[in-house]
Length: 233
Image (cartoon, rainbow, N blue to C red; front, side):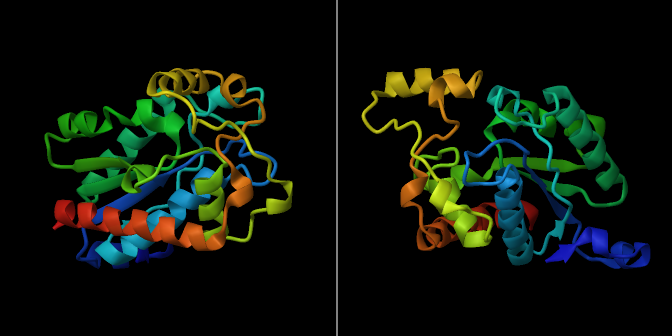
């Protein structure tokens, strides 16, 4: 893994790898037991692993995301268009510096709308000279994702010491809901998270473990490595 921000100009220009990964997270509430940096922390750890395994240049994590749906809980948010424009400009600049295959790795649900048309915009702007691939890391695990619940809490326990499990409280459970009910509650959460979850937690963090987090992390990274390797080589 090569963290590009630590290199000097001559070293960057001599690097054979012309592929990079940009982690994108958020700063928003994750219940009383996890820091607001949770999305950024997890996506950074995943991106570091992918960069190392696939020989990618690792760019600094974009820590601000689109999290307005979490109000009145804490969220330090930017608009869809702001995030989109930022990434388009960055990827075009990377292409001008001969880094022309870019993975954008998303770590927050609320960013998806801003990211969905980025590949096409950059292809058009650069006349297909710069190729961008967008992935959300949770799509690479065989389990339902949550917010500050079992999955995210386990992942945070696996990658850091920032979890205060003693403060964890069970949140919204969708186990006994029909597919239609889940769809409805998901739509509500995407607009006003507090109305769907009450305490800002989706899932049950009280049963999270570091061991489970390590298993989930391994599953995500192994699946991502397989996908990314095919795209950059």
